Image (cartoon, rainbow, N blue to C red; front, side, top):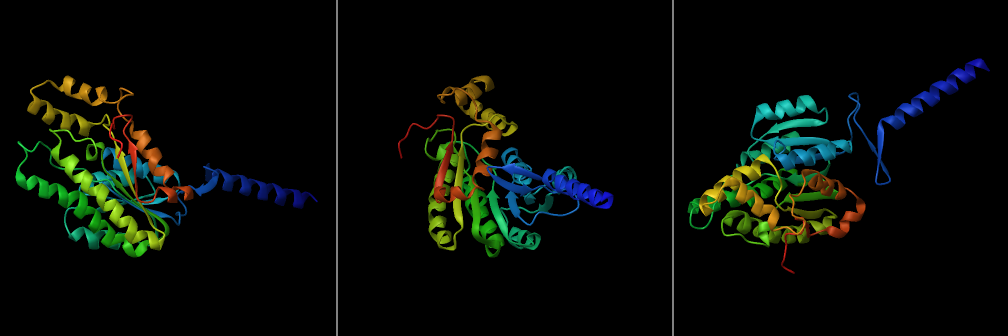
Length: 286
């Protein structure tokens, strides 16, 4: 009788430990890596060393999903991998075709999500940007997404998500942000094209379109725009919040929330759409 009690206690303890290794998210249990085993689910995040790419990766890892993090800076990738057991570094330049083979070699099984979060390396207006900068921007955002799809396509299946980061300038153009407007508008068109290609395979395609986010990147962008407009940095930064009805920046956490939302099965209904995360900036109807 005493031995049976000991066995029962042991079983209860093991059951409790198992529960602690899972978190309850939106009604579904998701395994959290405990350093011993690895989750069966995987994702690829391009731009993982950036503000929003990093937030997306952390959200996915919080759900127990292994993340293959893609970025150009190998040292920063290694530092991230040292902090997160579920992150596998994959040094690659998404603007170069060599990234296709590099990413494909790093993916060792079916993918739950691919996230294209690489930012534009060039800015300016139609009067100040070099003509070739537009080709550079297309190569990174559109060409980069094509490379990511070529690398990961064989591992995408029913329930997988293709997610790309765009921006609100696609539908609300600003004269001093020519490339974000032109390229992200093209990206939204491309998302619709891809939805027709991948939908029959039960793979959904989504764009997340943030408004201005308070980050080191937005400050660098503001410096360039302020110089073009002939205003100080504080005035330029204030213009980003003044145009939103909420009068504030969009938070990084809000974008991460959207990434988590797209993991839910109900997000199938968002296939081919753009999630406008702009905090009340958009004025257009279509």
